[in-house]
Image (cartoon, rainbow, N blue to C red):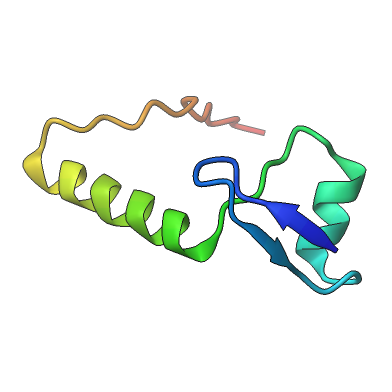
Length: 66
């Protein structure tokens, strides 16, 4: 399967029957990132987390007594 990175527009090929290819075929909202872009975003996110000004907004889990 040929895929295109949404950030740098590099076209790569991934195996047709890989879990990632299945996810991209069945759910069009999922996007593909090449490994270089993924690593760059991961590194910048980790750098921002180290500064202490980074907040990750996640839904609060409610503890159910049952």
